[in-house]
Image 1 (cartoon, one colour):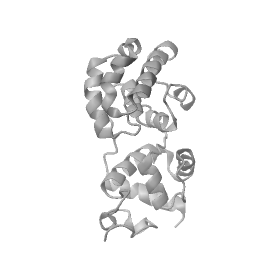
Image 2 (cartoon, one colour):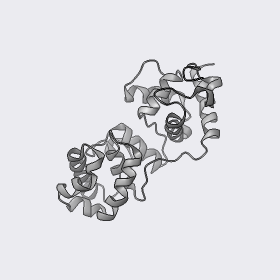
Image 3 (cartoon, rainbow, N blue to C red):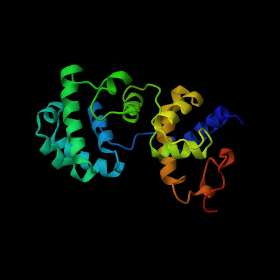
Length: 213
């Protein structure tokens, strides 16, 4: 089985196991997903969702973020960690969205990467979830499972993993594929003691069995 064949098989098996491929971060507006993703750096999605539930009430518009003192945003996101840097990035990004992009989150990689605090992971998530474009979000789960599934070998660099996956995945499936990898990585293929005996990918995984039996 080639890597591309394995990628197609994994895509199909994950789609069957996790039919609802949705982002774990909760949002209603495009910029809310952008800010939530920034907050998720070194923080769990569950914690971010707790924080943004109140944050988006306290700051209901993009203008309210742009005009708020940084200290006020810091207070709202303190439990997410790295709150000084994250608050500065959120405020600066809100201002930039209003002054340069008409209050809309850009729909292309180049402009997204110009926003403060936005890297390829965040940009890909926006392109896939907001604009329905082919995207590969290489978070820690994606990187770990890509190595275990043999799509890459001993690669930890997100950009290199993204490049490798783009060559293997159906572009129309890639965004949902990454969401499903997150779900599978949390529930089954965990960092420690993966539950190989419960894995829907066992038949095509070159690392099977590596976890508890």
